[in-house]
Length: 162
Image: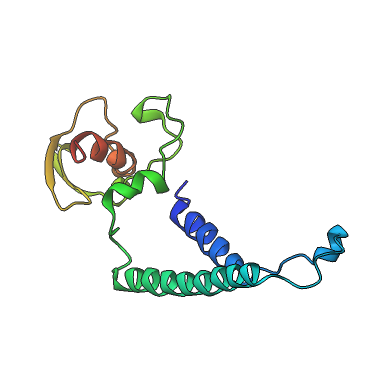
């Protein structure tokens, strides 16, 4: 859960570009070609092109991605729709209440309860997006503080996200 696939994708791209920039060609003698004593002008220019632009694009990509990462606040994602690439609620074939992990912020939901006659009557749920929902406590819900606290992520998914 919460594996940052963008990091893996970026590492693969940067690794490929750095490889292009530092590529070492296998000697033609390895393939036992007798007529390949010195590389041609075309192959030397092609090698220079790949090395030069591979290093240049790698450095530019590292600078640009560093600027984007450093300009963030560490809490919010600059690409909101990219969250679904970084995390997939699993297993996808189960109902919303039976996932092994979730990719939302509902674990950060908080609530205050109102008691009447010694039992909880209502919950004022504060959603991660700042929205407030007042929910009537049903009889089937736990009536202790820990039990209701354990229900908060589920209540958040039911009332805050949609």
